[in-house]
Image 1 (cartoon, one colour):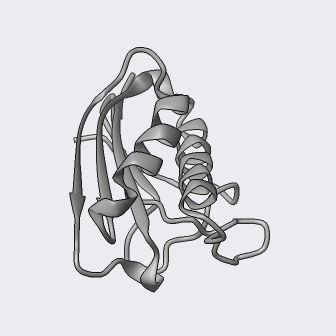
Image 2: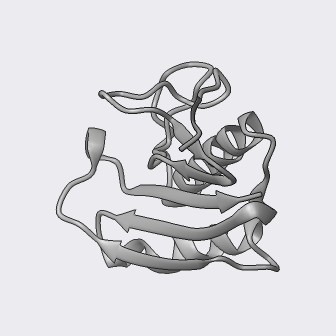
Image 3: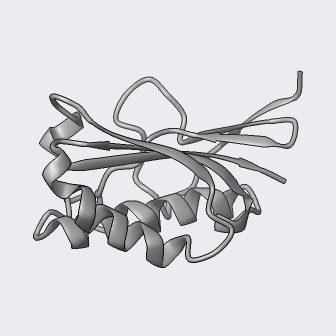
Amino acid sequence: MNKKIISTNDAPAAIGPYSQAILAGDTLYCSGQIAIDPGTGLLVMDTITAETHQVMKNIKAVLAAADMNLDNVVKCSIFMSTMDHYAAVNEVYAEYFSSNQPAREAVAVKTLPKEVNVEISVTAVR
């Protein structure tokens, strides 16, 4: 199998022993992104809306590093600290996927890295 590590300074560096993304053939598997601003290294957590926008910007940067964009995304996984964030996250998400929406799941989990409120991972195909 042809496997390539995808990495960009336009998205936060991995905070553990994993890659930002792996391109295997024509499929890109992106690790979950949280709302770290890659320019400052700080979390963007003023509001759930701002946090979700930063997550989506980070996803777009990783996709761009693999010469892809949101139109290539076929699957999203959304993890939230509480389902109370569902409506706000969904509203921001809809701005980025206004058409050609990928398959997805959205779940609440007990805890996310760095105590964030939302983490999103995507799978994309050329």
